Length: 443
Image 1 (tube, rainbow, N blue to C red):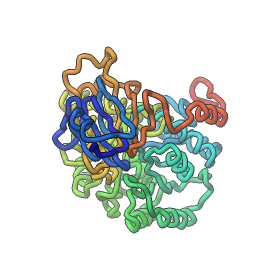
Image 2: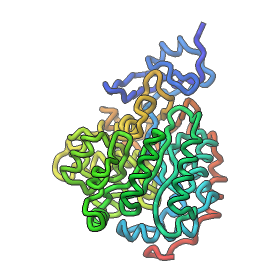
Image 3: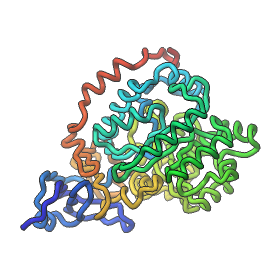
Image 4: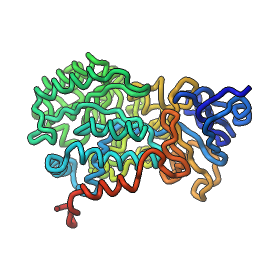
């Protein structure tokens, strides 16, 4: 008799993104209770398993779901309101708007649209730093989508939630203490915005709290030269130097951006096992520069990919970030600086590793969570297919994603969202969105 499984995705080429880069031609993935049971040939697995749900992926590519390792999902509310400005000009505008606009209701509505956009783009996991994270978690849980989030610390006047730093510490402790029985593939997270919005003693206290609860600590660091100069003038050390001197770097730390780094700082990241979320699109758009990803990789630093928020990158398209990462580092004259396979791994296996979840996510292997996507390969821009990594990095688009599965649950099938009312989500966001801006970005 056939063995029962919940889901069988079969018939397509399966790119496992395991260490060997295994590609199973006409393969299949069998899933039970949200876990991958087996990956193998389609004929063999169809004979072995009877599935409650079968997805025919013939003519398609099946691969792990994409990981967005740095984003601010609810910034969909502000998409298009802060374009063509510097990072500091961007922050000045956005912080003011956030204080005026954000509430649990607006964050929930904005995140619902962000989840819809992400599922359509094949993104199955995201690390989200933002205010009112409880609202974001509720939306993600209802949609069955994998979201890693938690309390955010940013010591600025008029914070949207009105919490003073001392109250925020007590609240964060309660939040972490209450995180029992979380579903597999989720871990607690604390967000310390940056070394320019938090004092060294605050950063130290936040890191200690994160480590007490085994949480991932996520910070912005060295996003542009102005930030680096600001921190250096204030504390006598560059951001990464400061974090290192405070003992805050480590394998439980993920830094966003890391654009402006010295050789010593790269060595410190490698020595401590600190990971980096590379956000090439927002870094270019804000004129921040290009992170030294080839040097980071050469030093052994884990590098993931992020989109940043939709107000700085304008989309949550991780495949677009893959393409940009594979291209932008060639500008110095070395076409091998970041290859197609490396860029695709940044959005899958390396993204999972940066989150501390490499044993549960990021590749299609037995025992891992069943986060996968089906990419339709029949369109002209994807033919002929000489190399699967090349197809992913240089040709594929988010619109090519046909099906999205998280924890074995089909969230999109044949480009129809199954767990989220997209039209209602869009209507809710439009009702809450601020007035359109005038040319030049001024309301």
